[in-house]
Length: 98
Image 1 (cartoon, helix red, strand yellow):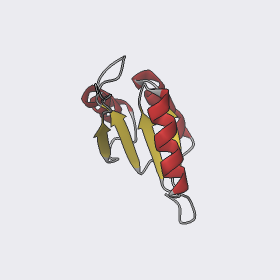
Image 2 (spheres, rainbow, N blue to C red):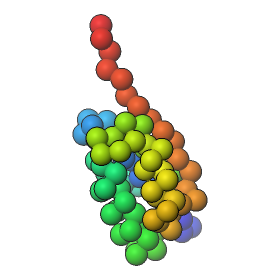
Image 3 (tube, rainbow, N blue to C red):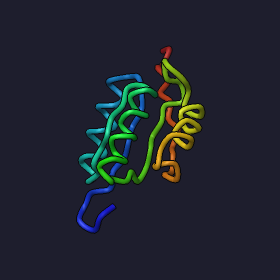
């Protein structure tokens, strides 16, 4: 991260509501947020981010994505991205049955 840049966080989740909610919260707290709704999209964005020489400060990954799971995506990122050393938080949202 450059001296004047906002910290950048990538959020990968297949639920649009979760993506937008997290983006809103993190933007208000001063973070620059990159959204991906699938593992494939996340990997493509990471390639683009590397090309622009921008570094992510954190990745928030859904545990259960439609096209893979969070731990598998983490492995794919480490194998296919220059962003492999970025910290990861796994997240899952469970709907109430009440």
